Image (cartoon, rainbow over all chains, first blue to last red; front, side, top):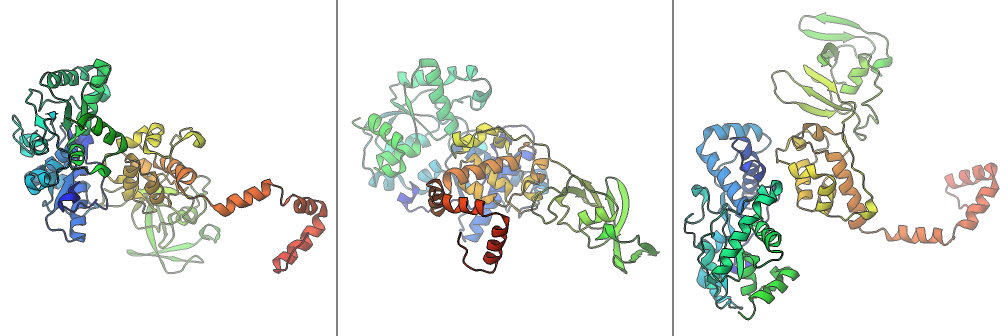
Length: 264
Length: 253
């Protein structure tokens, strides 16, 4: 999608899982090994291609959180640097200047909204949407892409596309994340509550950026209600549809978009 | 070969260790430890040859002696070095102070599957080997691989579902198992990689058209007559035909 706004996105030569495995543990150094390795590979790639802005773009909120957190800890904590370096003695040194940036931030901070509006093909005229941030774009505060208590960035873009974001209390609620792998029975009530609140406020769809939030929201609805009351869209899908760039949507997603978003 | 030559007389002159005799007069000796025991062996031998030089008769943990079969996995540490090194005994030259242990066999369970019933996807591999998803990106596997495969990258490609890319990356795997011994996620890479290559070969690689044609010809009986005549001809005729063929002459039956 970003190519539409003259932003070149390059896939790294090498990348591994962001390092989520340890990201949520309390242990200190080891959790930074995988993310810092990714940052080092990004650094190598940037040097090879002489890219000087050093942006590392993530589409997933969790990847953003893990990579950015590790980057900040590496800059702040000498002890982490020492220990991570000892593990990463097969890699060049991380210089600490990779800028981890989320897709939403690119649209918000680099692409101007007027530029997006110029390309609008399918106005989402008055479509009520429930933005759902989950945790990883907003917490902890040091990596938050917006105000943690009253975030707006994810509503701003749909507004440009003609949609009407609703205000509801669960916007920055936790979806209960990976607890779903261990105790789904504890998880399902949360997405159901979130959905009920969104429905009460008139929302027709959810919009999120996090695959895990999307999964829990959908599966939670199926488990509690027996069907999906409100479909979950990624912000990138919403913009692809609104800009008429159907080639960026998989067939089933395009059908869903046409069924739900058309004629509103 | 070291283990077949006559016993050699060792001469020690101060710090410089030298050897006299058939094996290599004047050669420098190095000190190695084999499962805790101290030995001196001529420098320049491979670990495998050094072991045989010392009189060990290897019945496990040895195979092709050419760096291909992956049977002679060996691990060692060096003095004043925290690293645990790994390599093939037949390809690694002994170094002074090596503390060696032979790995006769890397224990690993190969999951049962019917290749005909699988699909070439990452989830199929993960269903058979769920531990693949436990990769924490430590890169210990890549560090020890004697074939210089990017082992961790290949595992990550599998997690992403890129079977073809993974299969190409691990083509050189000789199943020595060093990576699996080091893996904190307890992945048994060589079994996983074998599955990935099989999936690639069966479902992704382009089919060899000429092979299909030849199989069809055989099934249609194109060569049945010639084969029958050949079987009936008997050993003397076979010898005569083979000699002709070796000279590059046309052979008819």
